[in-house]
Image 1 (cartoon, rainbow, N blue to C red):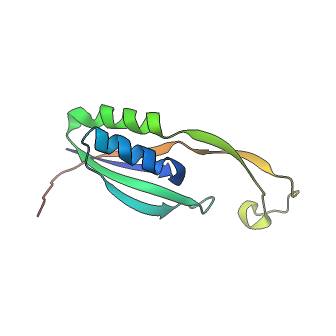
Image 2 (image 1 turned 90 degrees about the horizontal axis):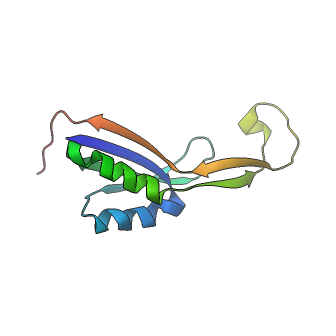
Amino acid sequence: MKLIIAIVQKEDANKLQHAFVKESIPVTKLSTTGGFLSEGNTTFMIGVDEQRVKKVLRIIKDESKAREEYMNPNMMMTGFDVSRQPVKITVGGATCFVLSVEEFKKF
């Protein structure tokens, strides 16, 4: 058994959750906050048999899109004073961790 921890941008969370339901993939959904931009994310915890890992990762990849946004840098984020011009950054997509599960119990 494997545990997939998938961190996605909140804008992709509902679409991804519907895709999991459509494919009968049980998930646990947690509201989380990213450390760099301090914006909302959603973390999905998915326990699956090893043969379903590729399918789950494909669904996550298909439903979690990277996008470009502009942000205003500030001294708190960068550690030095920079111009107040907006900076283009890439956000979104998904960060996934696939972990081996030594033991699984359901009560």
